[in-house]
Length: 174
Image: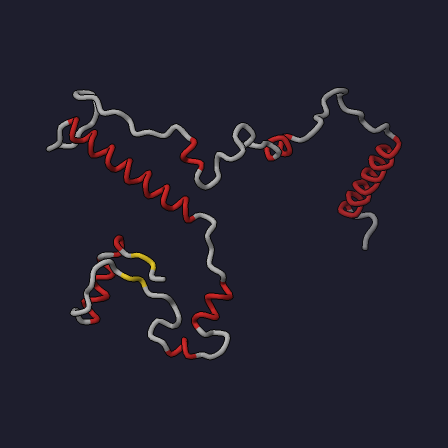
């Protein structure tokens, strides 16, 4: 360590300067800021405290679609899109038929809302609580889907191929 070297003199000067600045700031009065610029709550609190469902509390509940004014638009001959091969009247009838089918399907599903199977009863029914015979079953205790048509004469390969192709017609077997 050489106290006369330029490096050590610079280090000592920097330390002394920092010490003087720190001690001077300790005696300076704290800044008060501008009066009246403080918010009662932060922007984050305001945004995340909003209740977006305030106007209609049940607008997002299952089945609330029936209360909304949802309808299929009208087809105007000459100004609306009509697929090739159909007249405007035929296309309007087709859209009305699809909308009716969609509404009936929705109503059918709303009726099933909130209906749950008891988990314990499911396990008792398949025998999980008493034995492990379900583990040897071909479907491992799961309920199989049942197709609306009978394909009993088909081989198992064709059976499963048909099940995949007809998945839109499948119903849950209970």
